[in-house]
Length: 111
Image 1 (spheres, one colour):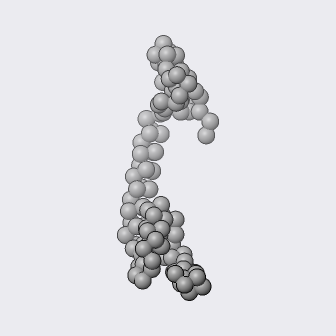
Image 2: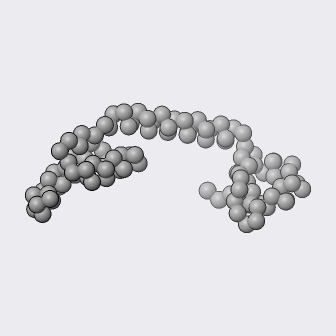
Image 3: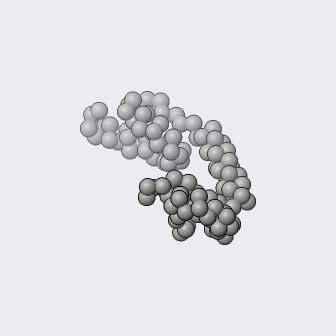
């Protein structure tokens, strides 16, 4: 999404104008050529906040359902899978397939 960008000094001088613009589309505020804030319509903010909360709850529920069994796996592999799980990157089926390849690798290279 492209947003209008304005410097902080201009926002100070013409706040009313930028407030009205924020009802049409978000306005990015810059200070020293660096984005520091976004002025958005209140209803849009509420929508985004609700969306964030829904996603957060989804992640919590997903992590409850996806507890991994890494018994018998090398510690490095367990650590790797744990790191991936934090980002929600693998399903339980992916983990099982990874275990098969891990065991194949282990027997192939005598780890």
